[in-house]
Image (cartoon, rainbow over all chains, first blue to last red; front, side, top):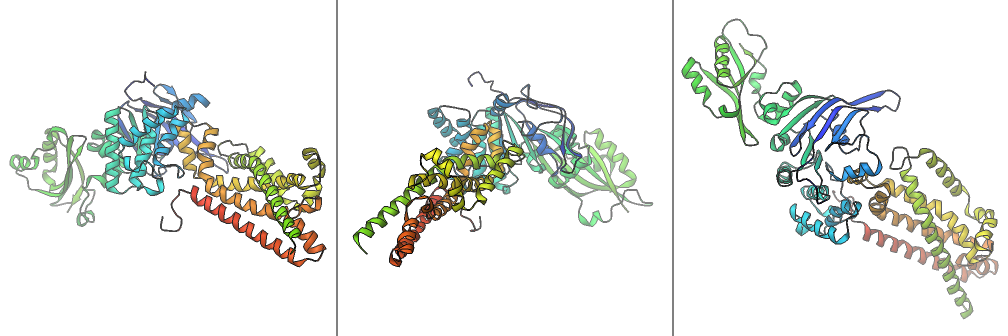
Length: 353
Length: 224
């Protein structure tokens, strides 16, 4: 373990497919022609609805599932075809945490964390010091001799994380690790994952159905729908300029900028005849995120702008704002051109007569 | 009751305990691995071998279908080959063990199958070998259920051991038949029954106590 590089390993999916045979014959495709590179040392989120194939994709990264086509490489090693001892060796380099923690009820906190080390054949004295370090790192020193049944959900997941880190893996896979936790606990667990990523430099690949999780810790995101990756990129780019409807659907829940209901009922796709208001989503990204753009719009174009909803968020340390406004439809095109010129993104959501 | 009879009762209790203890021990030695294998060799499990599983399952069922008193007589040649004789208390351990193995195997199989498949997955993700998964995950996690299962097996074996008088095995059951029934000594019969009741109660209590001690799961049915 001494020659281990401090950095995490990359995960590469090369035109990966996974088809399951149905009991009555025929096949179901869970993952379809997925090509995705998970950068070494980054935190990457795969987001998708349940049944979208995200879990299958994740489990191919440690050989719990085998691809039926394509290749899965972790740190350059082919996981998809590795067998026996070779596969077990790769798995020791890939930690995994689970939605339901999957801790042994028969073992204490310390015993659970020791398990992967015992499995790897680490000598007992070394296990003891390593386990003590890990317990300290996840802040469970007082609970070392407790059994999982005596712990809260957040504490259980901390044990899960410590256990996953025991063999000093290069990659950590997270299978909906915070989905069974309350919002506060989710935050503390995400903070812990972030710290680990920063301090140990290991790659984290997580799957979730919550965009908030992606926003809070992932630097990269891939959106999976129906077994296919429909959008992928840096979290910032995907959040500020989502391309695919599925991505937008996920984002609408997390951005806090949905249309007020009184407008939702009235809004129409085509511009009505006569005076009308245009409803526009304005996304402020990067250095313009905090510019007083609407004031400028009013000053330079003499426009009245109604603010319907809005929020400024941070992804990593980069702020971005999202604003829903309505303005005179006759001047809509001018206004949008003006905003675009100043580096903002606009999207017409509809018209109100 | 004469001192002679009391000595007989004490001796018979010892013989019963001896037969039950040894057959439980041997039954567990063979039944535990067999049960584990039955659990993990099912289709899609850790060591998927559906055909071997089916054949073993049939053998286990066949053995369990044979009434114990018939089993005792039917395997006399086998008993003689193993124990050197087909009569006596020690020889009786052979049929008791043969009856115990499939019984314990099924109990262990059920206990192992109750273990959350997520734990097996977690162990596989750690790079554990199937044997490590059995030894470090499946058996320890199933231990509370296995303990209760073994308690049940011991209680059944105490009952079975009463029938081995048919091949010259001694013990409480044999004493009850020979003295209580054939010599019309209802007081002996009564004492035998009381001792058996006390034995079963003791075994059950000890088994439950051990099971509770090894069970670290959250208490059931209390809002967990």
